[in-house]
Length: 260
Length: 259
Ligand SMILES: Nc1ncnc2c1ncn2[C@@H]1O[C@H](COP(=O)(O)OP(=O)(O)O)[C@@H](O)[C@H]1O
Ligand SMILES: [Mg+2]
Image 1: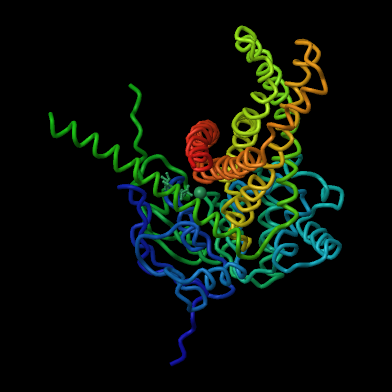
Image 2 (image 1 turned 180 degrees about the vertical axis):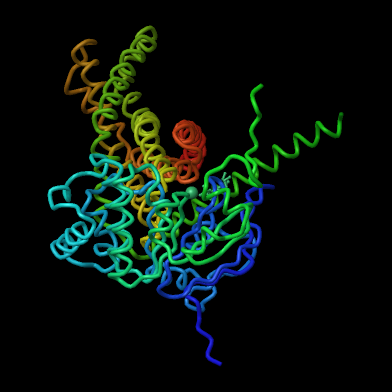
């Protein structure tokens, strides 16, 4: 029997902050070339899960394997090597405001790959073109761009080093529907173009349906549902039903006081 | 009741020890990182300009007025006993030993310590530090090391300038206001200018440079909770570095001049 090693394999992952349990035994396998989307309410721990995989947050217990290599407790060298294979789009873009737009996109090319300034800039401009941005913004500072443009620059930065795995943390949140669709299309395009495995987080169902081939739902620290994108409308799961129809009534209860 | 009282004291004590431990760990990690590659020389140069060069106006103004007021006040005190001749020596010794390094340190703590804490704190709360990690860059090496090295290098240079300007301030007041003889003031100053005084001041300055930048980086690096968190990190960085400067100043003085 030849077992196929998942690109990312998460087993029984736990994480608490103080006495607040955020992840309570998460299990998830992602195969190479998959595009998985995690849905779930705000504050359900989606970003924490991504940060655990990236090693930005240390989990309390559990296992995270990337390409069959255990990441938890791994040496700095192994983790750094793993990080070179990963690109990440942060929820708030997280562009370096002390650097120009092109220097942001070319960050690893300049610092890690030691490319010459001209080469790096040329490649940065090509990456910016891939996300539909022109040369004229290359020398601006990130603060001079709109939110949607910052997202696209951050996307260009995330794909600049041609990663194997890309994480998108709420790529469309806070954008208008048209810009959201632009970003969705870009994600699909770049993921196909560089042949990456993608793991995205969103609570935007339109976006999830568009970019995912598999959707999982995180609720109270556990993955309570997992299935193909087209199955989500017949999930038969009360929580998923409530979430995708955006109803206040259902098994998911918001702790709010009813005004009388 | 009594139990509760001890519990509160104990918790506060443990918390204080923990944060001291965090601080010591951070500082030792930052300082050891200075000796291992990768190095970022361009960032270092930028920080030396930021910390040293752009602090020149503030430090220069502080030094000149301190030298001037020092001459004026010593005159008031010494003229009564006919000791006016001691003024050049009082000015040069106090400036090079104490006032140059301490006042420059405190001014730079306000200007640079606050700016470092605010910048790194903002990078923390906007996830730019996390982004650095995902772009396979060690934030300690990229952000912290250039700043502390720049502080260590720039502060002695600043203090050297402050010494010269401070003594000049004393000269200006003595010669143009108190009618001292210019030549004898200068000879007197040079007679009392002792190498160890200047060097002790510069060593102090290097320590203060480390303290200021380390505090700025530490409070910025661990700030959380948005704009308010960055604000309180800035305050803490300035307060902590000012207190540490005054404390270390005493012990360094004792170490230098106890013999
Ligand atoms: N560094 C942290 N320290 C303490 N609590 C945290 C930290 N990061 C996240 N949390 C908490 O974990 C929970 C999940 O956060 P997050 O993963 O950001 O939610 P989301 O699913 O909206 O991305 C939140 O309640 C948040 O308060
Ligand atoms: Mg989030």
